[in-house]
Image (cartoon, rainbow over all chains, first blue to last red):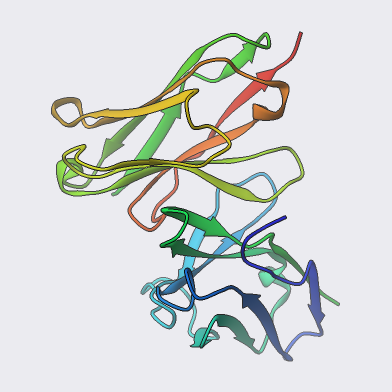
Length: 110
Length: 114
């Protein structure tokens, strides 16, 4: 049981907007920033979004993040077939004194 | 290029020990907090330990507390994870990662089995 809750799966057709939610609590997302990671099968994860909304320069601008209260969201505007991957959210938890991850969301592009 | 390379994984019997290493390059290692995380086969990511730049603060996940020890050698640009009393459920790919997990190493597989 993950501290952060993500839907196990999400899907969309090419060009659609897809969003993935990440629900936490007052000790993690509620008081700290959220990050998002992308992981392809057999590969290490890669940072996608940090500090809720910041995007590393090499990440396409169709990826965006947001946060409201104790939840964060990842949006992909104009999803592409190469975006098929697992996506994880994470945040520091002040009560646990550690990082907590969501269970991951498998994105399928139909 | 910022790079992290893990090593030391392998097959170990329950109750055994293993030491993982993470060699860092391409950045000023002694100014960054470092983490270990793991991913069991077919499962999600799990953070297991953090160490600050000068080793002043160290944190562990409850699942490994008392069994695993994180430490670093800033002179060698290296991070380590000493794993004792290993259990079958510790089987996973172990990753080192900088700061807020950017970047991650390629991972090293630890298999605990009799």
